[in-house]
Amino acid sequence: MFDGILGKFSHDLGIDLGTANTLVYVREKGIVINEPSVVAVNTRNNQIVAVGDDAKKMIGKTPPHIIATRPLVDGIISDFEATERMLRYFIDKVHQDGFSLVPRPLVVIGIPLDVTEVEKKAVEDAALSAGARRVYLVEEPMAAAIGARLPIHEAAGNMVVDIGGGTTEIAVISLAGVVNWRSLRIAGDELTSDIIQYVRDNFNVLIGDKTAETVKVSLGSAHPSVEPRFMKIRGRDLLTGLPKEVSLNDAQVRDALSRTVHLLLENITATVELTPPELVSDIYERGIALSGGGALLKGLPELIMAETGIRTFMVDDPLTCVARGTGIILENIKEYQPLLVPLTTE
Image (cartoon, rainbow, N blue to C red; front, side, top):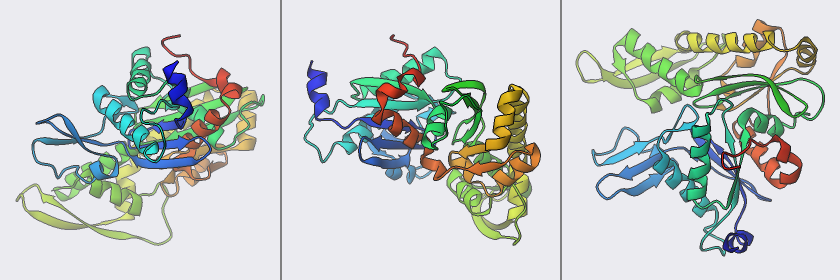
């Protein structure tokens, strides 16, 4: 009863709980939060020091008693308490200008396709512990397809490749259901690790995640560009232990990323090969939709199209696609009820 009363003063939320970033959609307002999924904790008093953008700035720069960590790994919760605290922080942030002292929102959360019952329950429990009065779960590729306004209810094939920070979800959707899919634990974070390893192997220089991320955004590509691009980066020389500056070009970064990109291509091709021929015909006509932050890798749509022969396009604002999908479900919860994942408590 109290939840119902408090719920009237709360903002219902759609959450894209990602490995790299968490996006929060508020009913009738749109996306109001887009921050890194990072929590900084003071181990001396077990207090939260920072969450989101402020916590990300601390990575690699904290004293021993402060730990800046990502509570989600490969799209699943690895630190339950930190995830709960992060969700509570975002829920309170949404309600800070409202009248609700104890917010009890209804929450729709996107989850990867291959989560186990235990992993699914961890998401439910984290959201409920953070203050949600009710939790609905939706598969991320389905949320991405809804966010991209694809006609998922039709008896026709729609193919979505959602490349996030920790997971890549490849799904063929028809009649509001996933017909064929693959879920990979390789995505944007793997590309960042590839750059760190390449610089280490070829220059004997150790760089951090933040520097590698900057290189990926600035020079990363899956297809050769017309104009060569260069960038200077700094790290620690593994031979002397002193700072060292090296120059990277886009061809070197493309070489560093090639293994992971090739693995993505192989799985996209394999998914198409195992899809019923009638749906493959529809996909050939409609194309492959790319969403997620990893879809922003330059030249990726052109490379997938060259490899598969299927027109490949990036959805509008791929970074927010899943969050927009959870928001559309939130606004029309009864209509989309059949698409939601059954809860472990049901």
